[in-house]
Length: 286
Image (tube, rainbow, N blue to C red; front, side, top):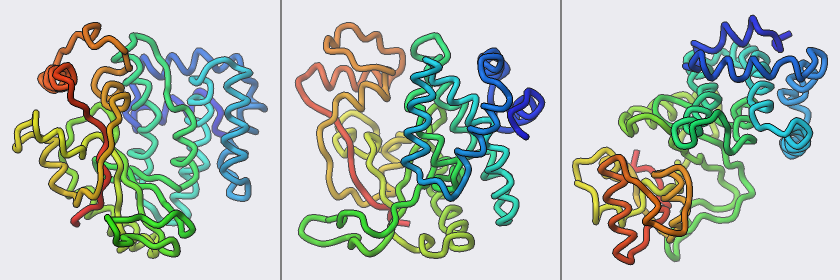
């Protein structure tokens, strides 16, 4: 049984959760009975239950409890069953703890921008709990099984529908360094535990590889060095994404923003000049 204060307190420092964030979750425990909490933990990590059912159940749960933090509390406890699966498969504890860092990560982001504990998007950790998403070093990696729409590079099919590929994600709140080491480690991990994904295409869709950032950032910046790891095959405007990532929220009036970093100042000046930023789509060179 993992829905206990003892388990949560023991796990918190290993996934780099602050004492303040942990206390915010522990304060919610009396509102969920041990029986209900444990039942949800088992349900969320049951490999026979389709992912869509787990997401729907947690959407109802959050609506009933009126707080996404209640969901994070349950996920943190459910991770005990996930850890059991890691150990059965011989997967490293380090990757488990790094992957479960997804729990404090967004809580800290919410506190940073809004001064309160929160979590958006609160359904995201379900993939981590079910061994569909792993953080390996600086980056995270998720599965895209066969049956997806073809991935195109211009007129050329880059990844046909019958071939799986890996989606890469970039966690918040840390310097964007160590990307190449992470990708190499991820390939080794997948070759060992999920061979069909070891040597496939690794894709990402993120504002960090929008090539237009090259107009405002130094080639030596961490972001531009990260871009160099990818063949960028497309981009599209998505101001909302950039504003949310740089400032924590989207505002219609750009004059309402108070930039506190050189990146924020550069992005704001660029947008105020009438130009747009968005997301890039690319695949790794590694």
